[in-house]
Image 1 (spheres, one colour):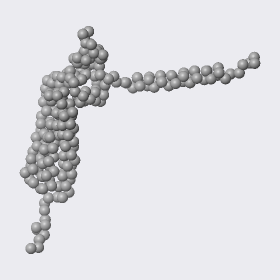
Image 2: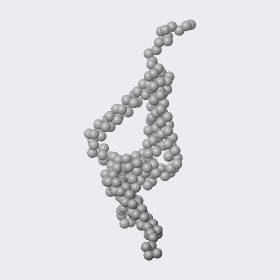
Image 3: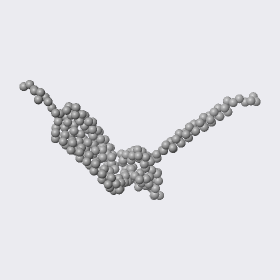
Image 4: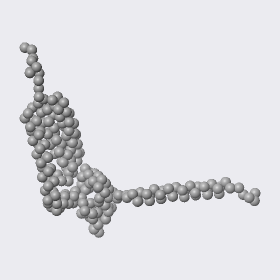
Length: 222
């Protein structure tokens, strides 16, 4: 039976359909990568891995990856198969996440002191476990470099770590110090280092010239 024009007509736009599928596919792949990295990190660290979510980036990657995987799966299959149920689930979940972010932002602004205190507690916990988890250590170092900071409030926060503690009983070589990521070089210091190096090179060249002249100058009494 031949198809009529009414049978071929559809309200579904192919451009919208495949564009939605394409973007969801990208984030679906990213979700798989996050899950893989999180699982690999947990396997490599074995029993030394920390169980606390607030100080273990591997667990955080796994949870974010799984959530992204579920959402993007609904978006991919729903758009490709034109499944209303999956598309509605995709829209509802994204709406819920957006509303949660909005509520969190408002609550963080209204209860800024409590939010700051909670963040400080998380940072203090991370500082105490700095040497116990290589992922956490890299995360803290990256944050301190990016935000040009040292510790949660000040460099004194690092005294909470058993390796950096400044007590006389601490046998660590890192006693009374801070991680290398705290040692930031300012622009003025960078300029000073550059000028000093130039001056050193010039002095070395001058010494070489003097030594050369001493070796090759002619003796006027010869």
